[in-house]
Length: 351
Image 1 (spheres, rainbow, N blue to C red):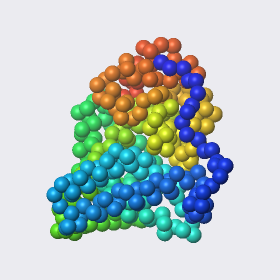
Image 2: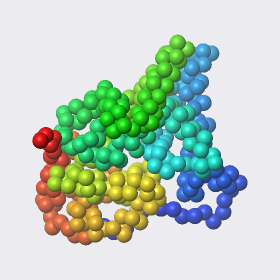
Image 3: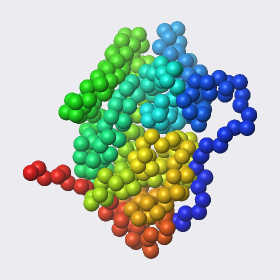
Image 4: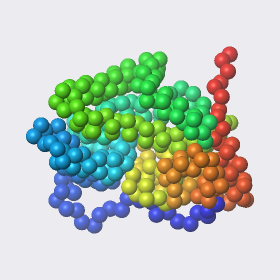
């Protein structure tokens, strides 16, 4: 176990001086704290997008084309995938641009997201319209409740279900809930993405595979690993309690790179909380984390937790576990709790 000392995850610190470009962006942004998002969007627009477009150009062939593939994959999968994906997450909860510039809010999901394998609108529809509405409970089609969450076999079933049935289950969910607007958005975004792929297939099918299809598969696999891990430890007696159904990761490089995404319990407790506010909220509410025996890890990210969980290395997980307010007396007690929280929660019996 670890003792909580201090936090080094990012919080908002106003600038002393603003550049002309800062001031230009601030006129457009709904929240000054999202200035880093404007620069990330600009950097992606000047690097990833042009390279992706060049891969479709017929005059680029041979070693030059393959060199651009390497460059594209560096930008898409190494440099920008995490920061972009979690920026899209943040702006799905809190629009990036002011109401008078609302048309700019379509740029990320409709123009940039497809280059990362994200079909327009489906992320928003799934995450905001269903996942947060249902909070990983029975009606959440991406719920982890009904799986053994330290089992690779169970995860592969979970992943296969999402890859092959996810969009159909999402549409059916909105139909049952009579949320027609979100249903149309999900269908439209998914359809436009694949119509685009089909159309561009006749231009250069190899580029379609590189720019859209492979990133699409990689993104959806990563999203499911993330959701599985974020909701791997559930209290069967109180599965709707955010402090008992979501993991918190503190003091990680991941939080600096991906906008404090490790603070998942506070995110479910207050979904619209700005990403810079989570560390402060965590410190102010340590009693809530302690009383609820919240799962808090330090210096390990979701992929690391997932890897240890699939190997059932509870002993190693316990070394990253933060003993908030000294709620636990030993590693054995922590390990017992972690094992209990990964047990499959059966479907409720119908009356």
